[in-house]
Image (cartoon, rainbow, N blue to C red):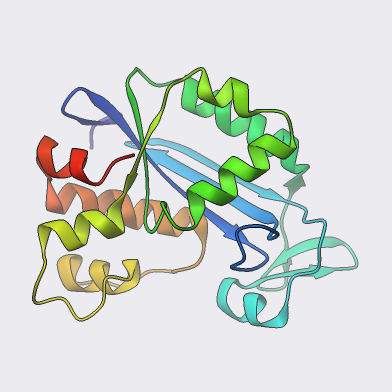
Length: 196
């Protein structure tokens, strides 16, 4: 496995968020994960708002008396501002230009990330890297317009890699997404069409 993912002349970093809900205007980030080759980033953050029961059912994340729990086991957390600053430091460790990929990123992960960066005064530091984003949901639809029953990441991983994984855990999600991207091996033109 290469030490990092490079597509064309861009460094590709896959990222995913777990949050307290699906409303991009109000949800809190509770897990940020990213991967590029063998380089991995994974932090849990303590939310300001409660974690609804339906979110716990999907992610396994809940709040207990002792802190944030993942399937009932306590996980170490950082403040969201600290987690975001650490994420920026992780991204800075890669060559430029930087391509940050997320599944359904244009509709969910990127707006949530950008709002959190703004709220915590970190957007200017993030923008200094001049990153571009790639939505792998759009890429999947671009590469395979027919013959796919669902473009959910879980279904695409099953379809192309023949395996299942711990979906809705951000770290498992980014690892699976990196493998899916390697399998697809998209050309620069298709990547460009799905980037923003």
